[in-house]
Length: 448
Image (cartoon, rainbow, N blue to C red):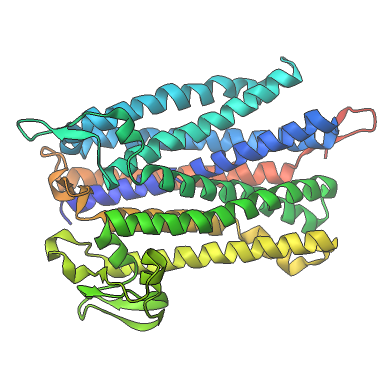
């Protein structure tokens, strides 16, 4: 347990906790735009009721996201100062763009979204909802661009002293080979994550026979959003794998447990990577299928892990393999679940499918788990590089930080985040139990 391992663990902990919230806010922001747009179009007070309820949840999620996200940026100066010096010219430009184009837009209109119902016109409030949603999307855009540049760096030059990378083409950095594909994959995952929260709460209300009109409308809207997101995940996931195979072949080899230097790559359904013997045990795989999906030819060789020097390839191959395949399995399961929901919705018997509704209640965890597994694949698969083929992770940590200091802060963050998450669950649970506002026949409001 040296300073590198501890710093990686700390960043993994803080990032994983923070990443619980942005996908919810992105997906929920899109749902809010749809709900409020339906209210303006139909003047049905039920849609206003839905929007006001989910705006409160959005505000809670946004606050947690901001509070947990600030910590990440401080670590660039504490634990990863060498990395920050090396990529500061590039990374700083992208993070500055995130602050200008995303955070200010999102936070600037958030007050109107939360408190402006009776202060501004319905049209102005709807514009504020759109701006907050767009701001959350832009935030994801710039963060994904920054991370994608670390995966597929372009648009830079190395300074004469070799101590830093300097930006030469800002738009090449923005549209680096993996950024747009990875962005589409992340945003489609966010649609499922936000919609799944609404589906979970709506299914709970239907099971308890509370706020049934509210729940039926919410469920119907978010079932479509989640199905669209899950199908986009399938398409963008395939494209992402092809980009990884092209630009990070060692990562792709680890994803499929492919060791042979030059041989067709199978597509495993499941298995266990025996890293010592460099093979997949207990695996069910389709021979040559990965080669067919990548190149249209099942006999075409794909570089395996043995094609790379041991020091230049990922070490935690089984972690990468299992994370990747479990993520894919969850994605396929979510497609099946949403299609089942659409089927019974169309038949008009969804409320009678209690077992299916209970699955929807707990399925809110599935997109979050898939999100985390995806980032495990992305980050472990990039190792031993923090900037692919430019800067090794072991060379990126701060020189003046000791392992004991990182360990102490890791323990502190673990305790604080445990308390924050408990508070979040308590507040979320109380808002769900309190429920939405009901409307009288004259348009007035009363508490349920």
